[in-house]
Image (tube, rainbow, N blue to C red):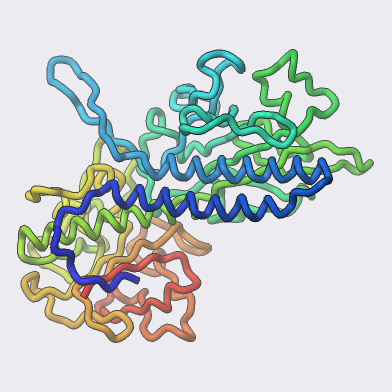
Length: 429
């Protein structure tokens, strides 16, 4: 929870939040390396496993970091004689796999194919595009990578990425039956360590074919762009090894949670800027307001979720118009174009805005409460006009106050209600 008072500087650097998140990811990676290093010893197979686990961990963290940094710049593209037109990035989008010919100069770079219609979303890990050295598993093979259509880099897919986004990739345990990604836990991406070739795989003759490195078994197909995928090692009824791919997934839930931390930093900065310039907090947008309960199908064309200037309210969604217009330092364009305001729960106590009712967080008065809801959990359907489809109140037995009744006018919030859920709460006195 953040109970800090409003900062004196109303224009903090936006990139600082993204850089902080990347630093935290680096710390997490350091711990993972220490963990897998404990497996090392005199046994060559254990050493190969250690190198494989370390490579998979590095790949996962690099992909998440890359996704978080998207949107820091909006490069301009020429369009006729009308001058530059901004291109809006989608933080959370992932690079295309490397589909370039292995060993060529372009190898290691993300291919543009998965951004076009009919493009392939599986290939080698694009290590050059990620700004890192080539990652190999314990057998010296380059890592492979598949990305969900919902998280493709800009191109064919222009749909927003925000708390309502879900993955589409499924992963099964090596028994071929146990689904490791039930509803709400689908993956945004999968990284494979292919291991040594199995019978029938000719990597010299087909160095760029996924089937030369990744296996299929029991209706699961690691060589297919959409899976479903299976965790190796897996054996058939005779005990023969049929899948030796080791797999690590990036769930949409964990990727969105990281994005939400960045989006909350951006939202709080914009709120401080609004107060500094307008003398009050912006009123929330209605939960059922125009465009507020709809998905963003294209980040290049967006009708904003706006405050109700006729009947101002004190609890609802974060208004996308008030943070984007008439401010010398408005909210980042990626924030608005991806509809982050409409997925955030927002309540205020500000007499200048006509909101005089006390706003409490665990009994302490606050000027505003802002909640990012995480991805939808079981039973939740979004977009929605019901707050229960966004917040969980998971610890009802220990909650001092509930959060899911805020849209009905109860402005008593509790941090403990988010303890076992996936909601992220920020507030200021």
